[in-house]
Length: 222
Image (cartoon, rainbow, N blue to C red; front, top):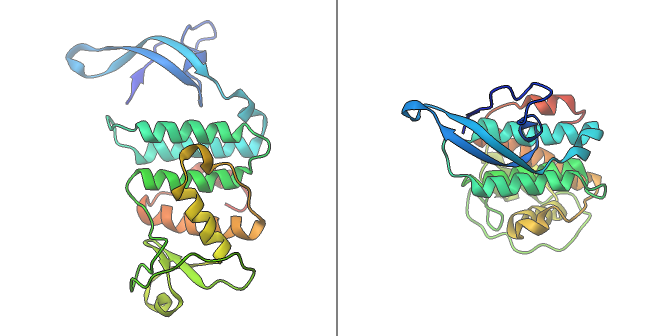
């Protein structure tokens, strides 16, 4: 929802700290005449996520999370699940052990799942052939990912745009979408898995949101 915070940019404003980007706050609003707008009456900061601002890469990804929410959510929509996801994603970016690019992939797939776009990960999205639990492997990719989810090698020519997935990357995708939110950001991945997840996430985001986010343009490789 849009809220007017009159004078919030002034150095001595009581709204200044609580209305900064990334700041999680408790807001008290009042409704304008005819319910045409809301205005800020009081704000108390809960968490500012200030450490994110000290690292350019983490700052860009945090801005990306905000931009995705801003562009994809409708005004007045109930989005408690998205709020929890954003808070977890921002918290993850404050931790040195968390790989920022991997946190972005967790956010992207979790965001789309919360919006109702859950990819198929246990069957071919084209023919329906089951894709069982795969063991860790270092062989070339055996499966592919489309806007609907996994695609078997036989259906690849007729499935439209796809990206290759190794078994390890498919395992990582299942981990992201099947675990509780508290655990989704608590893993690391090697460069190959991160690259495959990035390509799959880009395809999935483009198919279901269709917007090129400016925040990512500041990051090499995105």
